Length: 194
Length: 306
Image (tube, rainbow over all chains, first blue to last red; front, side):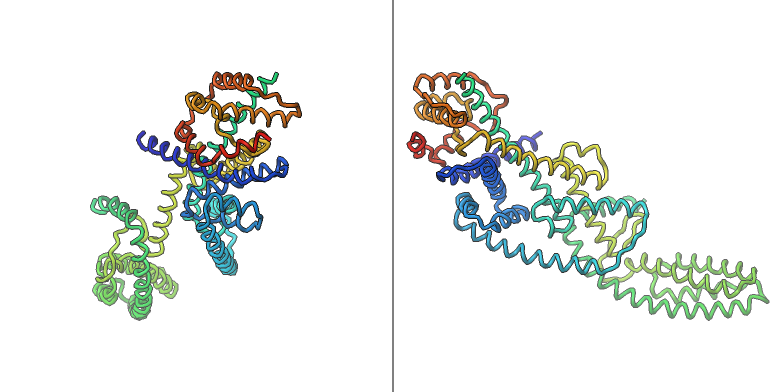
C-alpha cells in the first residue's frame, strides 16, 4: 500500500510536469494568426504532447532520446520552435548530439545484423524451437513499437518498454482528463445557448 | 543435504552479484578454454594408453577370463592428474572393465574396443568438465546448483535469463491482465497489445482535443470548473475567459456573439453547479495559479477580444 501511495504521489508530480510542458508547447501555436485545419491542430497537439512526455525523462532513457531525434529530423520550423520552447536552448544542442549517436548506433546495428545473418540458419522444428520463434517474432514487433527500439538488445528493450508504458499511461491520463473537462465546458456552454 | 542447502545461497549471490559475475565469467571463460585445450591433449594421451591396454587385455582375455583389477587402477591413476576425485573415475573404469569383459565374451572384439573408447572419451570429458572447476586452485569456485551445468557459457546465460525474468515480472505488474498469462510469448503479446492501445488512445484524444478547441487555447479557468474559490477570486478573469470560450463556440457554430456580463455570470453558475466525475489529484488550486503565471494568460486577453 505504501508503495502505491508513493507511486501515486510521484505520478501526480509527473503529470503536473507533463501538463506544464505541454501547455507551454501549445502556446507557440496560439500566436500564429493563420487558420489551422483540424488535422494540423491534432498534429500540433500530439507533437507537443510527445515532446513534453519525452522531456520529463530528462533524456535518461533511450526511447526519449529516440523521440527527440525523430522530431528534430523533420526539419519543420514549428517543431523546432516547440522543442525550444519546452526544453530551452541548452537541450536542443543535446538533441543534435543524440541524433549523431543514434545514427552511429544504427550503423553498428546494421553491421551486427549482417554478420548474424551470414552465420547459418537451422530449421529444426522442435516444440522449443517453435516457442523461440514466437518469442523472437513478438520481440521484433515490440522493437518496432517502442521508439528507438531497433538498436537495443533484449534486456534493454524490456527496460525501455517498462519506462515507455509508464510514460504513456501518464500522457493518456492527463490528456483524457483535459479532454473530458473541455467536453464538459463545451456541453455547458452549448446548453446555455439553447 | 549440503548441496541443497547451498543452492539458495548460490542463487541469491548470483542475483546480487550479477555485474561481478560477468567480468568474473570472462576470466573464467579464458581460463577454461586453456584448460580444455590442455585436457584434450591429456585425453589423447590417456586414450592412447587405454587403447594399448585394451589391446593387451583383448589379446590375453581369450585365454584368461578374469584379469586382475589393478591394471585398470593404474590406468585411472594415469588419468588422475586431471581429476581429483578418483572415485567416479574408478567407477567408470569398473564399468568399462565389465563392459569389456562382456563384449569380449560375445566375441565382438574390435567393436567393443571402439565403443569403449568412445564412451570413455565422452565420460572423461564429462567428468573433466564437472570436476575441473573445483580442482584448479587460483580460479573462482562456483557452486553449481543441483543438476545444472557449471559451464561458463551456461552461467552467463543463466544470469542473463534471470535478469530478463526479473524485468518481465515488473512488466507484469504494470500491464493489466498480464497475471493470467504465463510464459514469455504470451506476456509479450499482452504487452504489445497494451502499447498499441495506449498509442491509439493518444491519437484519438489529440483528435478530440483538436475538435473541441478550434484555436488551441487551453484556458485553464473555464476547463476546470471544480475549484470554486479560485473562480471567485479570479472572477473578472473568469468572466473574460468564459466570454472568450463563448466566442469560440460561436465561431464554431457561426452565430453572432452576444456576450454580456449577465450571460457570463449565468455560465459561471452553471459551471459551478456541474460537478465533475473525479477529483483530479494533480489539479489543485496552487497548481492552476502556477500555470496561469507560467503561461501568462493575462497578456493574451486583450488579443482575444478583437
